[in-house]
Length: 278
Image 1 (spheres, helix red, strand yellow):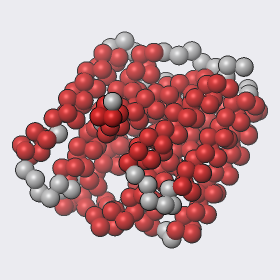
Image 2 (image 1 turned 60 degrees about the horizontal axis):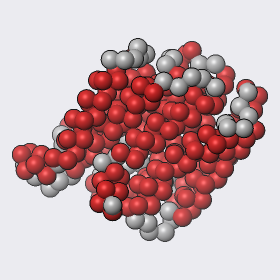
Image 3 (image 1 turned 135 degrees about the horizontal axis):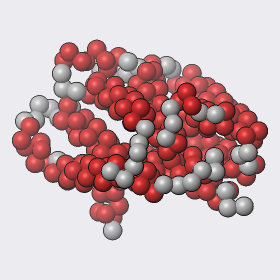
Image 4 (image 1 turned 180 degrees about the horizontal axis):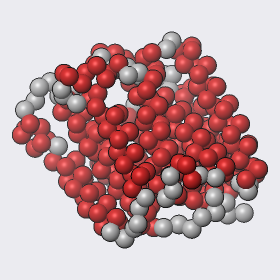
């Protein structure tokens, strides 16, 4: 059972479920119908993207390991990628996706992954710093807002726009927690992020400002048929994210980040789902 749990976390299966859960949250907040194939497509796309990202990252920082031995060691990840692509194609064939959002997401994720590529010509991108953190949070926001809604950002109404801003701020908090964990390793590798660019005390202040903005946007959503219970669920999720950030100041292990921190996405979706039952 422990090996299965580790496989689910290490091959990004859990975080793919979290992406689908946040996408479902978006539809619930706007009282829109749910398309199972669309949520499944988001699951498989996240699964594929993360496994490709981690595979490229391991190869890039793998101490000049040759390609063939590396691929043999990465067999399970490659099988997951193949299964994810198969799932994406199957779901895609049953959908009429707005490709505008999908293309933008792939561009953003490509920008995020470029500094990891094993090409010296691209190493200047490792100095991106703040942009790296924002790009990832924005990509997650598009995946879990615009793709489930199947509209372009220009077509969003006021309620959807507030949810978009709210989700971006929530994902930015989670990305900062991971950046803070990776700060020491990033410095060794020559990578920059929000956590490496600013001092710890300023980072704490910045995190608090993001939370205040997130809570303010949550309360503003009450004017657009988002219930008080749903708003409360969102604010509680933000409080928990802030508490997890505080707990991350001490050294934490693999489970903390890839189950607890990533799990905040599922937790937020669960709370709003329960709040939507009333």
